[in-house]
Length: 449
Image (cartoon, rainbow, N blue to C red; front, side):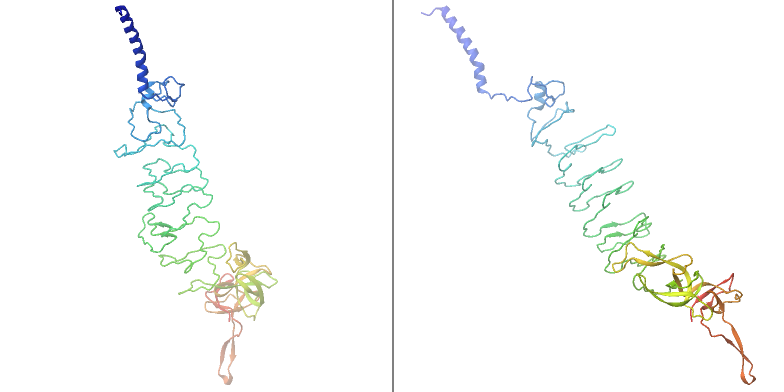
């Protein structure tokens, strides 16, 4: 028979056994806790210190629980930050996605840096694209306001900015206080336009022009209206404007309020390798030919010259040259010396040219030098000594040393007592005086006869 004392002892033992089995049973029925790098009491890791209080405890685990490589909704308590942390890893990017449309919060990532000289977003180093925009419903890059450059590229191994495809504007500048597009320095092209469907560069209105006219052709460069110059070249070391090939006109001026073409040049104001056509008057034109000074004396501007033969040449603007000398009394006159000339080598000759040309230069021509001779047009010539009694309309002929004198007349006695007749001498004529002789020279219309 079990005594009361024995029963008590059994109940105490049973209670002890149950107290030991209960925790074991509870542990067997629940999943085991996952051990990881962010656990309370582990070695301190700043990446695990969610509240940045210098330790890793249960509060840090609660703040960061379940947010590593998470895709879903994460409601922040807005009472902590991750400043100073460095997150490393691979193939597990930080992804923020959702619908953000509230005014002031219409972006999944908003950055604000009030520090002087601080950047809003910085990409230190990447092996491919710094910023890649896959599909954008609006603008690929929108800059609302920038105190300096809206987009600044300090250095680029290839292209500074590339727009591979755009349904509308590749680059759009709504308003710019200074330059809409500025290229300070470029190793190759400042602006390269490969193949536009319409106009390569179109300026609709520069300044406030009086009117604008657009062209329907797919032009390379078009200015619809400009208050100043439609095209201005301040300085060019080679050609100011070069047209390598044109199916129609190389240069076409349809209408001009002043001069259709106004040009000046150190050699020629205009150089034409083929025929020219003028539908109207050629005002101030002097017909001039290049020649060689075949005289033993210097030929000066205003000297009347006579022919001394021909000479072959290989210049682009002359294959045969006249040889001239100072005209003497009775010589047939071919023209009047305008200037000397010299050989000039053009750096960009036409395809069928050598580039070697004769160009006029101021001054006298030494024996053997090239010279420019005017054979039609108004010129000032030297008058022979004591022969300055020349008035307008008087015909002149060659005197000595390349000068001129008026033609003389002689009185001829008529037969049968019919009186006398003034007869002008029959000598070659250099031209007709346009004004009275003055200070040893006279203006004549060069017209050799």
